[in-house]
Length: 261
Image 1 (tube, rainbow, N blue to C red):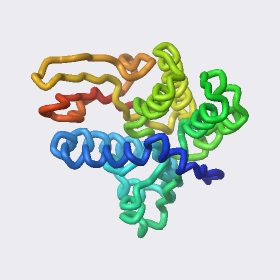
Image 2 (tube, helix red, strand yellow; image 1 turned 135 degrees about the vertical axis):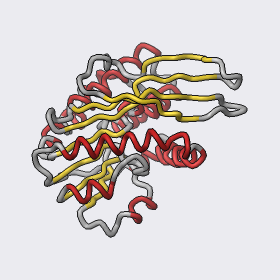
Image 3 (spheres, helix red, strand yellow; image 1 turned 30 degrees about the vertical axis):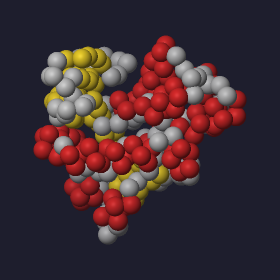
Image 4 (tube, rainbow, N blue to C red; image 1 turned 180 degrees about the vertical axis):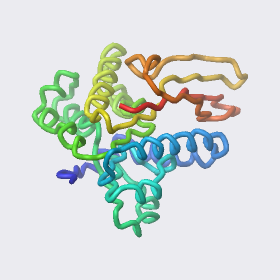
């Protein structure tokens, strides 16, 4: 079912993905109570969407990570085969579900551009969206034809964050300005949404971020996506209290939206 699997762990490590994954889990441990409703809402939406599938042969979860917000056991009971896809899978997660014979963890870059970005910078000391879109490696690795074979596709709390470490890497190298960063983010989000098969996919993602300083005053309130989510039919919405008030970092809240594609 899954014809290719990239092995660029060294690149992912150099770009900070392993560190980010560890920091995310530590954040979860310190915010369990604040995250609980968000996790419950996410799992409930995934399960309710899965129940409406016409067939239950195979499912794929994109951006599974620590599987904190993924109903692994429920999906494994509902589908003959379940694939969990992310750049890196924590060994604790893989070990936890190794007894599930119908569950498979795939290490894959769902943006298709992480390694390509790294290689562009290191080979040419330059970067542009045009360089990516004209790359043979990028243009021939289209997930749309692959994902359409699944009965259920989930993009879980990942769409708004797909560009984070790519942009951080390019900014550290001083190879991207604000306008180019917005164009790249739009490019990544558009590609991700475009590859999801209509009629059998669902998306859960933060769509807006609010940040407060240590005194509780709002610092900024801005959208995280480059398309309008206001008029999506049948969508659900809730607040994810991502980080509670802290003496040095303040508070951050996400508005999360879930919808079927």
